Amino acid sequence: MSRHVMPLKGHPYHGKTDAQLQYIVQDARAAAMAMRGWNDVAEAKYLDQVNDACTVMGYRVAKEYRRRHGSK
Image (cartoon, rainbow, N blue to C red; front, top):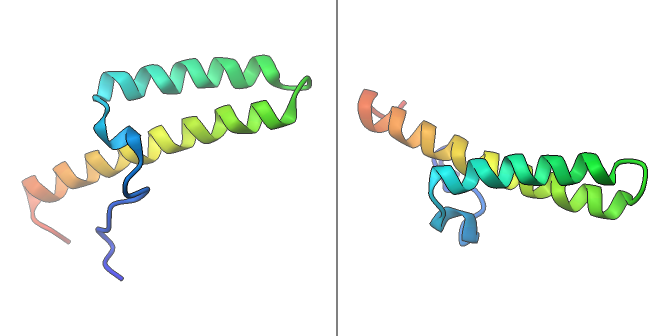
């Protein structure tokens, strides 16, 4: 399998702007912190959203790096 395969292929976060993803990270992180100790399921859901948004943003950064510096 190629190292450059799109993670979370088909995920709606791929259609969001970087600013929207950053907002999701901030908002979901705050929501997860609010749920800590009260609702483990909700906390995990919000942390999954943070992880998914960060995964998509990291993929974009790596893709841009490969575009500028050649695929490695």
